[in-house]
Image (cartoon, rainbow, N blue to C red; front, side, top):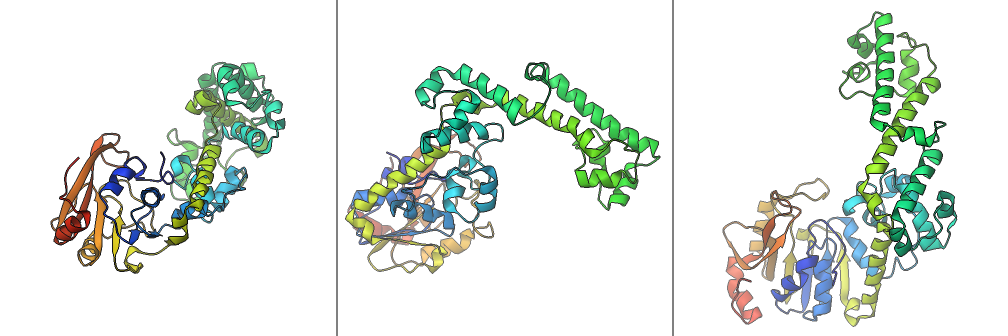
Length: 410
């Protein structure tokens, strides 16, 4: 079973194990709830009566919103432009439509986006017009998987003719891509260098003229080379010998970029699974959480967007803290930092039981359980690590009393 939503550091795969180590209490606090995996498991475990989710990251409210049915009728296609505009405002867009659920980068590459849009329109809206325009008659996952090479060929032909909008024959473009890219790049580089020489100027002169700091080297050098923008190019025409109008010379640049796009298009691993639609799969996972609404315990679920220090802890509670792990990939939380010493002091001063997920903790904390798993966050990425649960050592007697058993290692 999947618990919560995909999230950096999600406890989905060990949620049941974590809950097995948490004793029954009236109130359950998940102070760094992230994607809600542990709260989700706790709701199903029937060991607590009231549930308090909290996270400083406002996007963690997505779990609560999903359970509440906010996304029941969600069907939108989110374009790259909409994503960039709304990702910091809308948790749904940031979660469902970002690569690796990182909230920062759009889910689909530019080359594959039109294909995914056509699939979305067909499967969500029942509109096959975009797929038919590409030349694919069916959006069924089984059919596309079975006819993968046919779909891929049709899409590449459509992409080169409609997105790249080049007048060069598609078959000709697809021959010797690397040579064509190199040829066009060299032509444009030489054109700019020739203009520099004929004008008797040096890159430093161009920098002074443009008021930039070393940027001119990108136009005249070989490393990190790029072609000027329209505004910069037209300004340079008043300083260097660049007789060809921007739109005319940019046609070659556009072709070069199109060739690069096509080369990436052919290499993209995503084209090995044309039948998949990740955004829809994520949305459906959100919508499935709505089934929790039928549980009576959902009436006792609350969400807050506070610092862990500002959450009021009621008596007869257990506090679970899945803090950002030290020396691993970090979470974006306001200023981007986490004060570990401050947290350790806070945990030591709690009267209610505190259980902390981490790989290791300093003196003054005791491990009450550990479990092997594969990690994508640690410095030894994708290697086996030991997920541990800790409590303040001075709470050991309280933990044993509540748990009615001595701690053990799995």
